[in-house]
Amino acid sequence: MLHLIRYGAVCLVALALVSCSVHDDEDVISTFSYPNPCTTASGAKIVVKYQSGAAGTLSLLVYVMDRAGSAVVVQRRSAAVSSGANTIEIPWDVTNDRGEYLAPGPYVLKVTTEGLSNSLESHTAWNRILVK
Image (cartoon, rainbow, N blue to C red):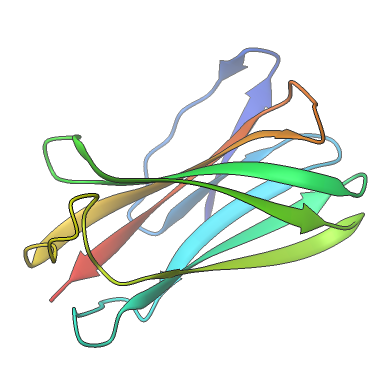
């Protein structure tokens, strides 16, 4: 696992084929999907691991992007989290925002938090998804 280290508003970026995370002193986020590769028959779950310094409601934006970088899936979710380690599972039927099954190939998964209970702090995690 390759990590991104966040310094204020600037983030040192490194790309990896496996996964990336953003680190702060108290909060850590990572994401992956399973099964990976997935099929339209199997569906998938997008899993977000979030280490929180406080309890509250976490707002998430989930993007699945094609090779051109266009978002084919955008989902807004919220989840109750406790202080400490949290795992959030989001079921996904391997369709785009129009309800059409995705074509086979590689996709990029991006999960961004929009803050914990009205916090302005945000975090982003990246990974890849292969659709067969």
